[in-house]
Amino acid sequence: MNRVASILGIKYPFIQGAMSWLTDAKFVAAVSNAGGLGILGPNAGQHSVTTSADETAERMRDQIKQVQQLTDKPFAVTLIVTGSSTSIFTKKILDVVLAEHVPAVLLNSLGGVAGADFGVDPETMAVLKGHGIKTVVRSLQPSIEDAQAVEKQGADVYVATGFDEGGTLPGGEIGSFAIMPMIADAVKIPVLLAGGIGDARTVNAAFALGAEGVYVGSRLIPTVENPAAENVKQLIVDSTAEDLTLFRTVPDYYRSLPTKLREQMIANDKQLPRDEAVKANGKLMGGTSGMRIGMLDGDLEHGYVSVGTGISMVHAIQPVQEVITDMMRDYKA
Ligand SMILES: Cc1cc2nc3c(=O)[nH]c(=O)nc-3n(C[C@H](O)[C@H](O)[C@H](O)COP(=O)(O)O)c2cc1C
Image 1 (cartoon, rainbow, N blue to C red):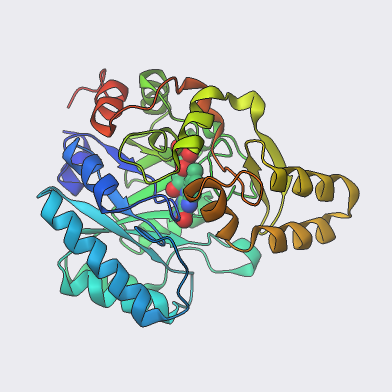
Image 2: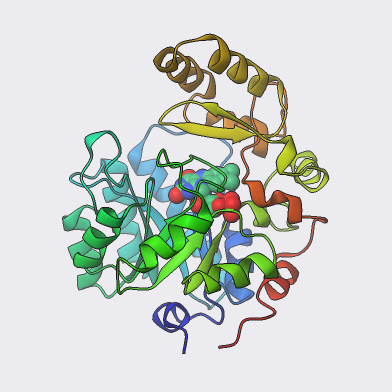
């Protein structure tokens, strides 16, 4: 039996990537009902920012309760944990995860970026393990050292993210094709591949490279259930990897489909010295505000549209169930 499916109690070793602003209870439940593991990401189900940790946690509780009404299948919640410390936001969300009996979590760590430790916050890991909660770890920057540290800490599953992905790009600049066998050879726990997976061919390729499952973000945005704006879903369907441009920003790189804001960031990248371009573009993006404005509100002037290079395989906006069934059509349990 496939280890990822068996550990997480799911039909397919298919995990939906946590995507800031672009998940909600309906979408996550659709993924879990289709046989994958849905993950409530940062700002799940929200259209506005709150600076209150209590409100952030209560918003997440509300989404968790909605998922539990829509599916009886396993799902996960994202916890952002750096190597040595954890924010009050994460602590409050962890309390909610425990109180609401969420079966699995995605742990987002830094993977040694900017001097951070490898692995995840040991205290959080101990609490999760003590409660029997399954742990999927995805570091901002995957590496051999990070994967081994995470394995030693007792994580259930590690995600190797290649440079082909959408969202915050790993500064290591290693493509999905190369990172997968490198990490699979370094650890014994199951490894999933993230980055550029968009159809059955790329799922099969991931398995051929040593993956025991796939971790998919961009392909799931142009789906009926995803909360992204309709014009953004259609833009993704109408675009290919050739329409994406890479630019430097905090912490390293992003890429976006054409928007007015993207053009400003490309200009900064071309005209300014590296550090200045990173700073200027980080400011323009406003954390993930530019993602909310571009992708959730559909404002292609003031926001950006961050997706991975796998979008060339997307030809229609489809229900989540159809997408996952088709992507996993060659998978044998
Ligand atoms: C719009 C967007 C937002 C994302 N936001 C997050 C996030 O908040 N946290 C996270 O761990 N990963 C985030 N990611 C990365 C995904 O979890 C996943 O690693 C990635 O989508 C996989 O590559 P793919 O897009 O080629 O499928 C985001 C990806 C996208 C496309």
